[in-house]
Image 1 (cartoon, rainbow, N blue to C red):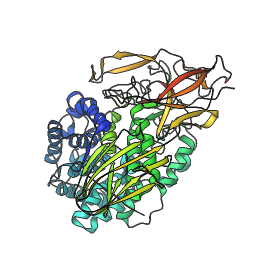
Image 2 (cartoon, helix red, strand yellow):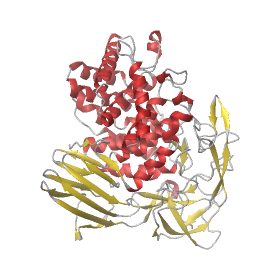
Image 3 (cartoon, helix red, strand yellow):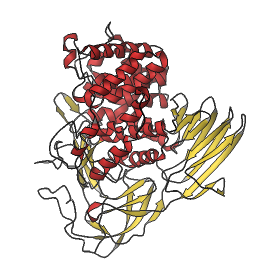
Image 4 (cartoon, rainbow, N blue to C red):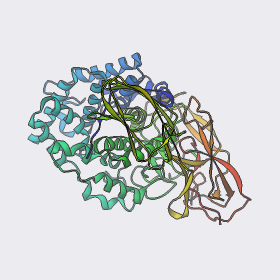
Length: 603
């Protein structure tokens, strides 16, 4: 099994559309959350009186690499302010979290697992020499308290025990002490064994449980991959088993699972929590890096290029808690929400619809994706994700110019500092693959370089838009890694208000998306054609999509789900055409904020 190492923000810099995406994020909610949201601005992690558990660590997990990728001095200084405060509040015995000493046994140490991961991210970005010592004291204290029985894993920490292994890996590499491995064994022994509960994932229930909580499960998929090496275990690829099982019974065409807030079955009208999207992306990034298995990189593209942008507004000042595959309106429910255990506002675009975890946690999505563009293994450099970026490391200086996934052409400008091989991952859907104008084959192309050599490599391929079947006689249109949907026109209703001491005020307010066009259509033909457009400054623009698909559809009687007038029926009332076939433009799923994605063929 091959393992790749990550480069850091000191070596990878974004370019092109991914830099635009990161800049939008920096100018939006993530880049300003410490100014406008009391749970970060006034957090107990800083000595304030607001939330002192997961929200500041969640935010920092994305804000830190974002700041360093963009080389933004102000953001870097603000990140350091938080890290300095966290370090300054560390207790003499190593305890790190904002909690009174006598209440440690009641404090869910999921927050410690999370902040330990964040500190490893900060260390990789900043090379701050304090971090290994801070982590050593914190995790040694954790080990002592767990081993003595003074505290134990419970609730969220029990289900997310593996999140601490990023810090343990760093510590074992730096110190090599056996207690670090022993702490890993304690965490696993007190943590949840997900194989014991997988039977609960087959049939969705309207019951909130940790066993079926969507974010727990999306984090869990990487659990074996991030822990087996330190634990000295054989790798069984449990990730494949877990992902396949979850997808079979809860899969959405964007590669994610329904979960609003618990697993919700196969349905185009159930929701998927934004936290689950970014955590699943992080799983796939880790799985590809740790196993070299290309299926994880391809799944990462599917989720990152579809599910993530779909649930964020163009300016990234607002986000949804829950996205729906067939989402015809984002209007507050007046009665029982369609969601299994989430509230009436979960699908609104806003500051903290339903719950604020996603407000903080969505920040990791785009920065960590950018950091997954290039990886290394011995003398090889791997182009893992074809994102426009620049790599400048000890081995080589490489600039990748591309508009992928919107266009399938790639130019690598390479200056070798040492002898090395460049491996370029090729997606499974690539056809007519060309390398420097010559026919090529394979899912990984390798190019050898001698020290001092400079040259360009041009790669291109074609792929065909097509329609794939979904359950219940529905279908989706795809083109490469992109999923497509029939967009629904809408107007926004801005909501400014205060609730529970949290102010919603433009630009960090809430929005309802109110439909202004019909949603009931079926495919009238299988033929699809690609229309390429100019890439705008907003890569996943809802107004200027970078490409579209021409499709033939006809009006049908779709109808509403029983009891609702803002949720389409799970399956249409009839597939009989009510109009002649009509040519329409399908938008990338991530561009279509209101959309019909799963459609039937007309009779």
